[in-house]
Image 1 (cartoon, rainbow, N blue to C red):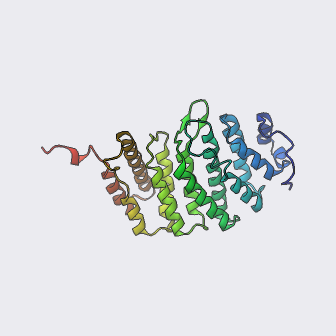
Image 2: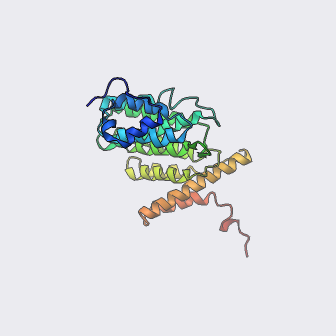
Image 3: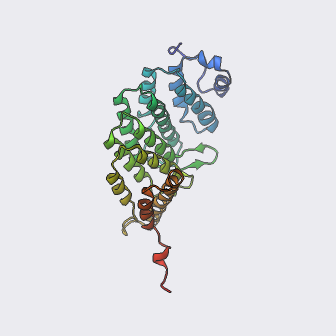
Length: 288
């Protein structure tokens, strides 16, 4: 199996990439390590066909099959979380730099998820990825979901996926899983209208972490108790968005648990958290 050397074609050429997708023999003949790194660079493109349909699909195929060895996987993971990818132009909003960041975090999640069942990545590499994703999430400011003509940016959804996969990895201990869970709560509080099903992706990741057994139940109860309406001093628009996003997340989490286990003891605690955002419920109605 050849995994080194130059690529036999231009990695940004859509026709060449489509040929690799259509012809497994041709894909196998291409050195996997260099191809993966070239495809990672393509994820910064505002062209959804090159970025999603071709490059991301090929990257997923390389990650899921046995083409990439442990060293190549670690190299790809390290590249995904470096300054040219996950942290590229971090802090900017409204421009195309968002794609490099949000698709890099998607690659992190895919690598970690694949490694979870049969760990080959060094624990230090997994720990570095967890720290990088949390640092990225704290500093991201572009929360757009779908961008007309350019496709999905989806920073919150992609980051939620990565957080859930990282928490489930055996190299991440209980304190690390708790930090990842708290990061999900912070994402649920962003002062930006999350209208592209981000609440479902956040809830799926949180539900997954809650079920792992790594985080003690008392700590999970404290985590749920932390969801609340922002302080009165918060800007009205920002406060409303932060409240709405939290409430939608908690509702999604509630129904995720209902579908999985309608007798779960967590349902009552989640409902109590939802009630703190209920401005129009029974408590707000005038007495008859």
